[in-house]
Length: 172
Image (cartoon, rainbow, N blue to C red; front, side, top):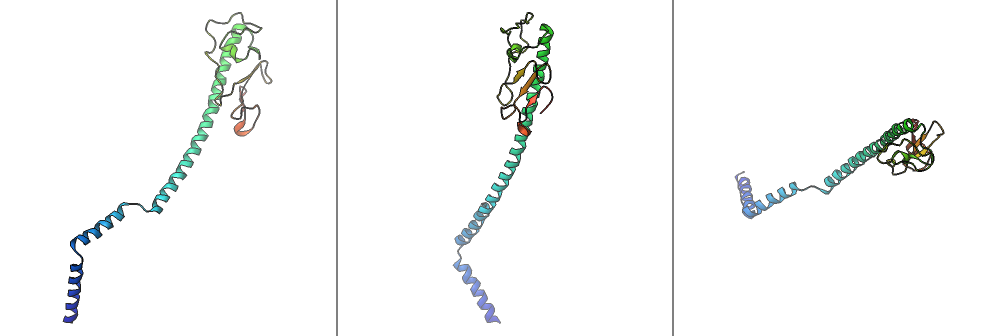
């Protein structure tokens, strides 16, 4: 038994003698270096998760953006209605289709020229709808005394769903 123990002790001694202190430190440092970095798989998993999150957030934001544009169009149409009512109060008629909504921002020169147009216009300017298209104004309208229509994202009258027109009659 002593021979075996002696042999094991010598083997340990030989192992320690072959491994210098520098090589032990080198091995330890290499192990630490490996633990500091990320593997390719870990990086790929993080990139995929970030892509999924970006997609979800983008879809939610775009839906909100479209809803905000529709709300803006309704608000602008309501402002036109208020200005048109003031125009009618002063002039007993609404502007004609030919005079258009521009009659709210500057005194019309096309007949019937209003006799009691105020010094300050009813509106400072006539904005385009949120999609960059001009509003359509008809007087007399098809459904009431006048129609104000935003053609929506497609820029064409009519349409359904996302491309549905927005008008002063509350229809989408």
